[in-house]
Length: 134
Image 1 (cartoon, one colour):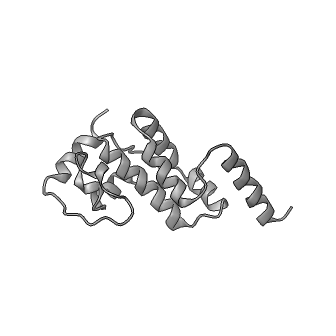
Image 2 (cartoon, rainbow, N blue to C red; image 1 turned 120 degrees about the vertical axis):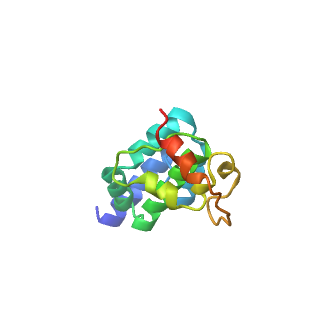
């Protein structure tokens, strides 16, 4: 079995099992997560193993970063603490992303694809509260 056949077989297994496979399916999937499930999935996604798995499945590094950024935006939108440990510094991503910087009260109503946003002055304070809350 060649590499293409292995990727196709893996894709079919994941698709059949209900796992997101395309970048748009990942965006939709992350948008459905809430609470502890969202936190635990974001924590698990912020690992080198997760990134390696996505890369093996044919996703680019840019796709991996998009998926993680969607986790960050969803966490902030729902006011859930961002996992601090992992392969990437997601707290820094939240501080530098214009959508995440909107904070928990407005982000959930904004598309994560191509946002046009204004950044409030007190976002750093809100993000500090989110990262220090259990």
